[in-house]
Amino acid sequence: MRNREFLGQHELLVMLAVLRLGREAYGVPISAEIAEKTGREMLQGSVYAILERLESKGLVSSRLGEATPQRGGRAKRYFALTAEGMRQVHETQRALAALWRGLGKTAGAKP
Image (spheres, rainbow, N blue to C red):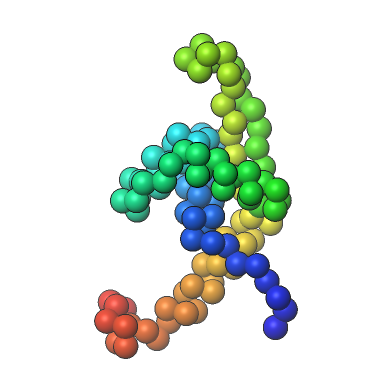
């Protein structure tokens, strides 16, 4: 078996939120999406730190939007998964599904 680096829980949450939001994926809605879907708060600073780490790994890419007066003339930075990011999300999904398979009765989980 080759040595692989797996996505961490927070990395996976951020990447899934980016996927769900599509072209509107930037810090504030990413944090809100995670909170809404999981019931867990994730600070925007944490989200941006994770996004920077994912971008340095080549798993997400970013683009600058237009500057807006509401943001004091600053532009929003939008994020999207790269092909490698998408591959790793699917690989993580397969690994988790394989680990869950067959645990229904022993772990008290619903099948």
